[in-house]
Amino acid sequence: MIPTRRAGAVEPPTTSESDISSRDDIERLVVAFYRDAAVDELLGPVFAAVGVDWSAHIPTLVDFWSWQLLSQRDYDGHPMRAHEDANERIPFTAEHYERWLDLFDTTVNELFEGPVADLARHRAHKIATAMHRFLAPPG
Image (cartoon, rainbow, N blue to C red; front, side, top):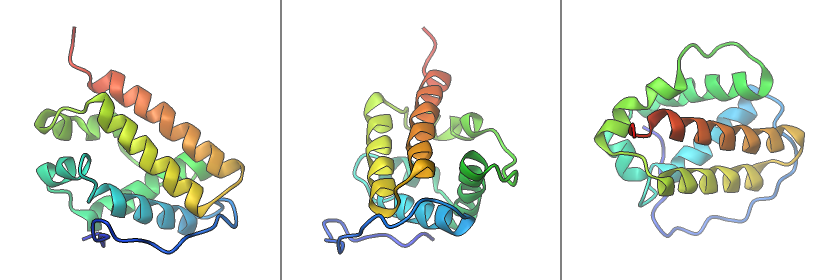
């Protein structure tokens, strides 16, 4: 299970010291981001409805972002299709995507700075746009 922050807990300030340059950096980003997303009042219920197994999901996410940011080919999957079940249980709205991006951008900004951090934010926005189109109801 991913560790969660207590709602309303004040975290010590963090500073961006370096760019994303390794799989360890990506794991740090993924864990920090999903720690917040899992308990977020808008996003948390989606994770709960699907019953995410964080011990399996976090390594998959690290593989995905390592592929996206470091060109490491450990990810084997289809990220859009992987979210179909969650979207069927709790349909993703524009607010879900906006909140996901806000949390993602904030996490990247707190932990990293540099061209790969910029790429992470850019890719997240492209992925959210593509996912929104892919999962949107027909019509």
